[in-house]
Length: 129
Image 1 (cartoon, rainbow, N blue to C red):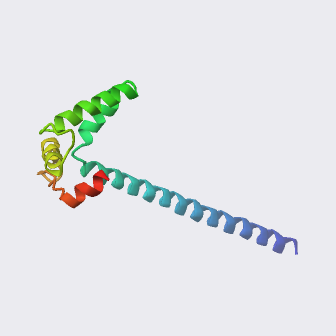
Image 2 (image 1 turned 30 degrees about the vertical axis):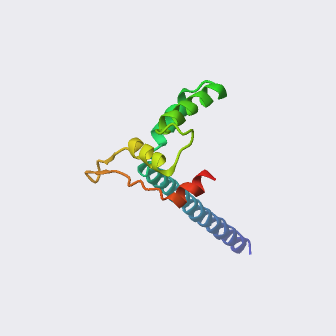
């Protein structure tokens, strides 16, 4: 009887060790896959850049306080308001976006990507409401 108890105990310990090893391997594999997915998501987000992103990043990095930010945005608004009406219409907004659009180079594909920017009047209405 003592040998049987000893054998059962050893088999139990080995079984638990194998199960733990499988669990740890599966857990680390899932974590690795999540990291790869996150890296792919970040790459996708960086490759499809908003044409306003460089300008907004520059403004966000350089302002000192809320008054400075307000002044910078007011100056930007005056530049975008080409007809001096005090408001932006969809034509002025689209023209400003075209001026701000940038080419993005994809070295891996050896090609440039220039985003096509078109905002309809209804899109402009929904953005500005």
